[in-house]
Each structure stands twice: as structure tokens, then as C-alpha cells.
Length: 273
Ligand SMILES: Cc1cc2nc3c(=O)[nH]c(=O)nc-3n(C[C@H](O)[C@H](O)[C@H](O)COP(=O)(O)OP(=O)(O)OC[C@H]3O[C@@H](n4cnc5c(N)ncnc54)[C@H](O)[C@@H]3O)c2cc1C
Ligand SMILES: NC(=O)c1ccc[n+]([C@@H]2O[C@H](COP(=O)([O-])OP(=O)(O)OC[C@H]3O[C@@H](n4cnc5c(N)ncnc54)[C@H](OP(=O)(O)O)[C@@H]3O)[C@@H](O)[C@H]2O)c1
Image (cartoon, rainbow, N blue to C red; front, top):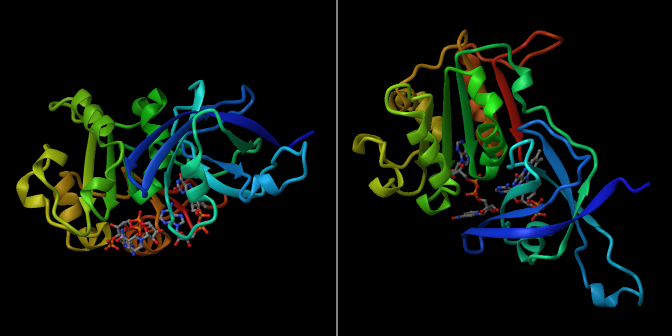
């Protein structure tokens, strides 16, 4: 029996030409996952014309991708960067509607809310495509009933890389000014944010910065308007491994640590490379 299934591309969204896109594919009915988990996607990368006649291509390259879709969606959505010299991501970006994408039947990953005991505030901290894992959580109604407040920090180089921002701004507006259950804070590192991309952010908080710098100088909590406290905050880090390492070190000084040996923690992390 094969360890993977063959799925079909249903839709594509280009967020930023030659850099950021999403792909939606059919879903095998037996494929189930928790928000935050990832799949292994497979493609045939090479010259299919060079294959012997009557041979259909089989996947020869595999990469990890977090599920963006809500766990009960009929389709699977993935969000990807195009690494210019990468072997896999440019081939994924070239896929056309109707073409095949293979998906390993096994689901992986521990960046899930099951890692935490109850807490009041959920902090979802991402750089770049690290956002993917959190989109599935935010689309899952179960997440909203577990936390009083959900804070999403998305660090990117330029504002044009703020993929999914309309969906996130709509979520923030839905969560209401009074209860403010959801706070979405985009942060750009190479240019200041503009008002149209961050209508809810006061002009004093739009300067270019890294998330780590903002945590050190206290501006992260000021921008969000909520304090990070080990007893009531649950923090996830996802994306660039250098960010994850630095942020983890800074948070550890503040009393945050992953769970171990049956003891639940208040920090969960995932590196994308
Ligand atoms: C657990 C896990 C989940 C992942 N989920 C996603 C996802 O949802 N979306 C996604 O785009 N990628 C994700 N990745 C990365 C993905 O598996 C591939 O590495 C990526 O698509 C690039 O593949 P490539 O063959 O083109 O380049 P690779 O040869 O795999 O990578 C080459 C270099 O590109 C850079 N790079 C790789 N991935 C990224 C990235 N995501 N953002 C910025 N720079 C990167 C790194 O410098 C890396 O050394 C995930 C990785 C892991 C381990
Ligand atoms: N667009 C470009 O100019 C450019 C340049 C080089 C490479 N690339 C290629 O673009 C692809 C992905 O780029 P990406 O922008 O999506 O992902 P990325 O390189 O991970 O950057 C995303 C965000 O993470 C920040 N960051 C990086 N290291 C950090 C750290 N140690 N602590 C805190 N924040 C940190 C970056 O800030 P900084 O902006 O301060 O780094 C940026 O805001 C890669 O394949 C890369 O090779 C692009």
C-alpha cells in the first residue's frame, strides 16, 4: 500500500509575484490533523519527458508544509515562499490547477494547542511563512473558546509580504472593539508600516523593526497593549530558526519554557528550516 496519496490542485493565490503564494488541493477523506501540524508534500521534480513511455511521474522531492486550512475543511490549503534556488518551492509555485500534488498519509508536528494547559492569552509569533500554522488555529472555532485573548504577531521584511492580512483584519474587526479577543500586529523589518495596511495601529508603532528588538525594548507589549506573563500567557514561535532561537532565549529569561516529561509548558516552537 502506498504511503502517500495523489491530490489535485483546485486553486492558487499569488500574494506576491515570484515570492509568496498559496495552493489549495483536494483532501483525502482519511487525512486528519490538528491545527499547527504539518504534512509532507511530494512532487516529481525533473524532466517528465525523459521518463520511459507509459511511466507516470512519481514524487521524488518531499518537503514539510503546515496546514493552513481549518481541520474540518473539505480541501487542504498550503502557504509557501518561493526560495529562489530551492529545489521544491519553485516547482510547487509552477503547479497549475488540475495538476497533481502528493501528500504523505502521516501527519507530523507538535506545534499544537494540546501542548498547553489552560491560559488566558495565546501569543502566536511568526516570521514569514511561519504564519501558516497559526492560520489553521485561527480558522478553528475550538481555538476561540479556549483563550480569552489571541495575539498574532507577524514579522516580515516588507508590507507587501503581509499575506492573509484581509482575513486577519476581518477577524480582528469581528472580535470587536470592546472585547478585543483578537489582536493582529503586523511588523515590518525593512520599511515602516503604512496606515492602509495597519489601520488599527497607532502611528507611533509603525516603525520598521524585528520582533526580537521590540521584545527587548518593551515595545512589543506596548504595541499590543498586553503584558507577557508566564502564568497567564501561552506562546508559540514559528518560522525563521534564528528568530525562534533568539526569541526563545529572551522568553526563557522571562520565565517561559517548553513542557517536558508530562509537565505542560507555556512555550511551543517550530523551525521551518
Ligand atoms: C515543520 C516545517 C513546516 C514547514 N512549513 C512550511 C510552510 O507552511 N510554508 C513554507 O513556505 N515553508 C514551510 N517549510 C519549509 C519547506 O519545507 C521548504 O523548506 C521550503 O518550501 C523551501 O523548499 P526548497 O526546496 O525550495 O528549498 P530548501 O532547500 O528546502 O531550503 C533552502 C533554504 O531556503 C530558506 N527557506 C526554506 N524554507 C523557507 C521559508 N518557509 N521561508 C523563508 N526561507 C525559507 C532557508 O534558508 C533554507 O536553507 C516548513 C518546514 C518545516 C521543517
Ligand atoms: N527579500 C529580500 O530582500 C531577501 C534577501 C535575502 C534573502 N531572501 C530570500 O527570501 C526567502 C525568505 O525570506 P523571508 O523574508 O520570507 O524570510 P526571513 O528571511 O525569515 O525574514 C522574515 C522576517 O524575519 C526577520 N528575522 C530574520 N532573522 C531574525 C532574527 N534572528 N530575529 C528576529 N527576526 C528575524 C526578518 O528581519 P530582517 O529583515 O531584519 O532580516 C524578516 O522581518 C529566503 O529564501 C531568502 O533566501 C530575500
